[in-house]
Length: 194
Image 1 (spheres, rainbow, N blue to C red):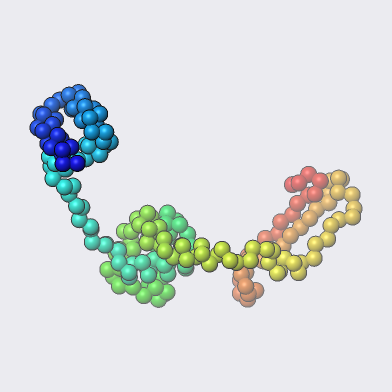
Image 2: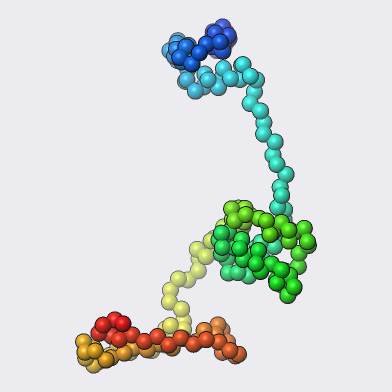
């Protein structure tokens, strides 16, 4: 190894002064004689000529635990959207949620939430998304109980003629029928599929 390093140090001065084509020729010659990998030799030359690679300083975190906790709350409130959908919701609904005291955060945290990017939102929520996926793995995925209680009756009549209709009424009320809510009545003509 020492003789290889001596050989490389003698080639180093010529290599640094050479033009591109000559550098390739010198590298080929050195690799052929020492049986070392070309990329390894290039890294070795740059370390010998310019010193060890510069260590990049790690930037200080802009968004701390307070922003992450607020984002987790907002993510839960808005039913777990991705970062691209959550970012506009945060910008439009944050003031209203603070007024209604759904979210108790400081002014500094509010400013950070208003300028956070969708990619950063996804990065900050990645641990929570992993937890949610882990829990979902063991849930029962069969039909829910309410659908088993609704009787299903197939028609005995002639369905190839026009005029037979199936209807379905849906109440958009959530878990309780108290208060105001919307209804949907969907109908389908069986023979044509309209």
